[in-house]
Figure 1 (cartoon, rainbow, N blue to C red):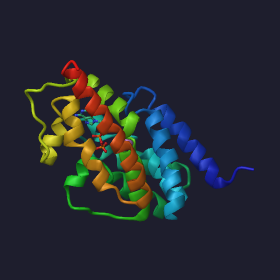
Figure 2: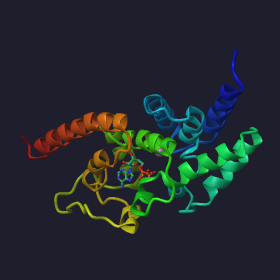
Figure 3: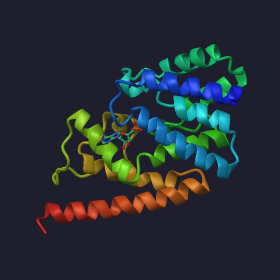
Figure 4: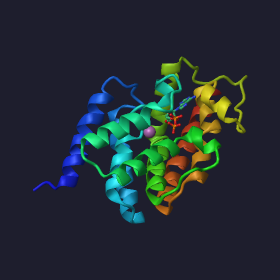
Length: 218
Ligand code: ADP
Ligand code: NI
């Protein structure tokens, strides 16, 4: 028997799949699927509210400002409209909107405006998807989409980027590792998130070591 809760989650899955069907492949349904799986795992260990966590994981990239001319007001409107149509309680809707508004990397440059264990869980899961083997794949697909080069030894990474500089994007894919990906390990919120990040971080270090070796023709 499916509960009312499962029914809403299943409807949300259908809605997200449909909405993201033409999304760039680093931010498509499979990104959401992975964030949902990782969020569930962390939520159980952190004793977070699973319903809020699942809805936020599912809806966190539903109208990413990056793909909407920088407009940060579309996502809350879309989320409120969809969840209201599913009869979700106002308190839950507000919580999901707060999570989505506050979880992105670019907003980590600003002072934290909202905090909850559910936000911490979904933010960790989203960050983990930027690390490890999947993280490497996503960095290259995003760079390809932007037309950035793989690497250019003449351009050094800028590790102390401002929010505006970050939004302009990394110059090369390899620089993106130094400008963002290697910083994520120390930004994790939960114990479970930290443990998983460590493993994925080490894997990326190995990848870069091999990359530079091959670059030198060794
Ligand atoms: P958020 O949505 O949390 O602000 P991003 O959208 O910046 O995070 O990152 C989403 C994915 O795209 C990540 O896997 C990230 O590594 C990748 N990405 C973002 N910017 C770049 C870039 N300039 N070069 C390569 N990959 C990037
Ligand atoms: Ni995401």
